[in-house]
Each structure stands twice: as structure tokens, then as C-alpha cells.
Image (cartoon, rainbow, N blue to C red; front, side, top):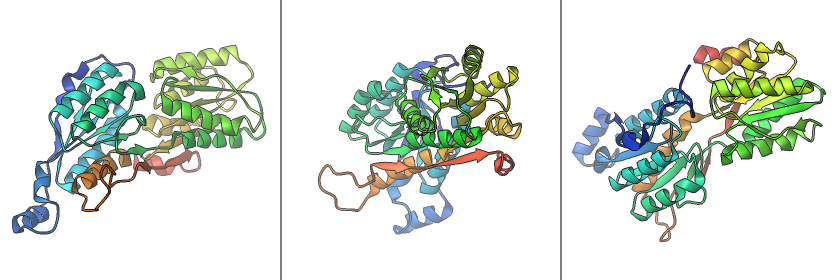
Amino acid sequence: MKPTRRDVLVVGAGLAGGAVLSTYVSPERRAARAAGGGGTAPAARDEEYVWLSANAHLGLFRSRDHPALEQAGRDLGVKVRIAGPDTVDIPGLVAAVEQTAARRPAGMMVVGWDPSALVPAIDRAVDAGVPVVCVDADVPGSKRLAFIGTDWTEIGVRQAEAMVRALRGRRGKVALLGLIEQSIDQQAFAGFRSVAEKAGLAVMEPLQDKGNVMEATRVAAGVIQAHPELVGMAGFDSESGPGMGQAVKEAGKVGKIVVTSVETMDQHLQMIKEGILTACIGQKRELFTYFGVKALYDHVHSTLKMKPGVSSIPVNYNTGTFTVTAENVDLFLRGS
């Protein structure tokens, strides 16, 4: 089973140094630099932009976020690096942010796993002259320059819309699973309720699945057994969907309980193909890191004349969502 956001060993901030993923500079850019004109600024090849996250090598990150980070490094002719612990070790992530900032990279992208714990570290980095943007999950109370990622209220709304369509007027209880302490999940829960409750569904209090497939399966199985009137389940982390799907399959409830989820990894797509999951809401994850590097690079190299203390890049980059159902899943399976 693939490591998840919750179930791998804590390795701490020792990975904060990371490994350079890309230092590629095209021949055209090298020629332009040698000639002293056009292309990327001559100093860019020595710049380093660092992406930091807890569980930094999660399969989801490795398949979607990291390749786009590498691509951004190639396109801009800069160095990119990954740093952070290989589990949901928040103190380790804070330490990684602090240690990385002390090295004075050109900029940092931070995944905001814990908005409150990360504020001091991000603020100190910005005060020290290291620009920071948040990607995937925000830390809105910090001095970060921008947030680049998904509107999680929209994820909740899209799941509820898909569920209401699939239920075709059936009413009953709906369970929500996710990382209930995270602000992005809370936004998604609220978005889901705003649609589902208007449609007459009884939305239960969200349940913690620890971002772990086995835990999601256990929790979902318990809900199915305890609530025979259950008509739907919605999941809000990358492991919720496969866990709920497995529980529904084992309970013999495929087709009777409508299951929706966030993310569109191979296991999600296959469960849609098999009719276990009804709909999955995908995030454009590649845009998180690609535009993270681009935003920081634009900030560093901007020629715009702004007022003192005013950032030259947008505050919010909404990267959008897409919905996968049985009608279009083959298109995604071919491209996976």
C-alpha cells in the first residue's frame, strides 16, 4: 500500500536539505546569457526555489506535484528543491522551513498543513527577505505573498452536486470523511452542506480518517453498519475515496450507497470504472508547483513599479477543479 499523509515513519527535518531536482538550462538561454541580452536574467541559473511539505514524498506528490516543479525549473533555468519530513510531522515541517530560510533561497513554496503552527516560521522567513507563497493548503494568517491552489469550498459543492444527481431524489443520511482538523477540509464540508442539505439530505458530522486508506475503510465500515439509512459518503483527502469504496464493496452496498471523493489517482479511476465510486473531483495539482515557482520568479524579477511593501504578484491563484464520472473516466484512464 502506498504511504499516505499519516502512516509513514517520522524522519523529521533531516530531509530539509532535500535534493536538487532540476538545474537544466536550455542551449538557447545559455546563448542569450552569454550574449548579455534576452531570455532569463543571467543570475537566474544560480537561483534556488524550494518546495516544502509534510509527507514530502507522498505518492500523490511524486506523481503530480513534483514533476511540474521539475518542469518549472527547466523552463525558467533555475534550481528547484524538495524539503520536509516524510510523514505528517508538523514540528519537522516547521524546522524544515526555518532551516531552509536560513540558507536564503530565492523563494519558498510551503504546503500549509497547519495554518497556526506555520505562521511564525513563514513570517520570520519573509522578514529575513525570503519570499514565500503557500501552495495546495494556505496559511492565510501569515505574511506569505500568495496562495496557489484549489478553492476547497468548490470541492465540497461539486461533490454534493454529483451526489444529489446520482441519488435522483432518494433521501437519507450522508457521511463525510477527511482530515477534520484541517481548514481546507472544513471549507469543503461547508461547501458540501450548502448543497446537500438544501436537497433534503441529512449530513452527519465529519469523521476523521487520518489520511490513511486502512483507517478510512475501518471508519466507513463502522458507519455503514451503524446507519442502515445511509445513502451516501463523501471523502475529502486522497485516501478517503479508496477506503470508503473498499468498505462499500465489502458490505455489498455497491450501487446502493453513492460514494464521491476528492482526487483522481489510478485507484480512484479504477473504482469509478467498476461503479464503486460515483464521482471524483480532481485538482489541477501540477499547477500548484509550476505556478508556485513562476510566481516567486516573477516576484523576484519584476520590473513593475509598485508602492513600497506592495507585492507585484496576485494574492490568490485559483487553479480550478474537474469532475470524473463513469461518462468520462476512460479518457482519464488512457492518460494516466
